[in-house]
Image (cartoon, rainbow over all chains, first blue to last red; front, side):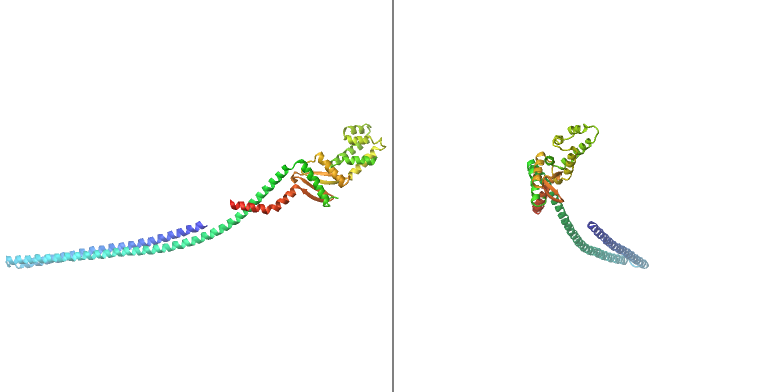
Length: 214
Length: 165
């Protein structure tokens, strides 16, 4: 019976452990999903920003070329100056765009790191909570089991004492009977015929002396 | 004379078995007395009767006694004999029979015989029963009594032995 209770408690604890592990796994999965979603958003944002900047640069170049074309009369030097200035503006735009991208990338990395850290911290916290709960349950189960075993042992000891006493008594009786038997055999073999005859006559004498024969 | 013969007969009778055997002998002799064959009685006396009794019967006529009367009166006398039942652990030998006979004659008179019963279980001594009274002087009873008195001590020593084990 006691072994059965232990088995039930063990099975119950195993079930609880399984449920908590499932919950933790699901939570982790959610967090990982969130991470990938954010990452996807970031990629989309980067692509969109790049597309927009490309469009802006292209537009600027087109406008610049138009202006240059419209001003064909402008001298070659002026043209060169304008081309240089256009090149500089373009470079500056590209540089600013690159900076923006770097910053966006850095921000994204920070966000991802933060998310990853959140996931880790949350998982660790939840695992700690579960661990503590399991320890408490295990301790309670151990205490209950100790109590059951203790009571069973007491009962068993008591029953054993009764059985032992009974057995000792039976043994004593058996030994006493053996002593009785051996005594009879020794007595019979140690008395000779003459002694037996004398005993019989003595018995008659005793019977007469006690008034049983008259 | 008759009294002397009765005394001789009584002297010969020790046990109940002796009484039974003699009664059978007397019946046999009485039966042969009534037979047509006149020699039947003498033949029986010679062949089927103990010598001591056949001598007594043969001497009856010499002593002026009738056989039939004598046999009948002896038969009646021994039928009235009392018995003391003595239970012993093995069959008595002649010496024991004689010793018991002497004791009975001295203490109870000649008109008592011993009825022996054999029971090995009594171990020794005797159980005596006479005129409705019964007493056990067997060795078995004495041994049981001693062991019963000593039982607490024996059990105590066994308990100590158990503890040592």
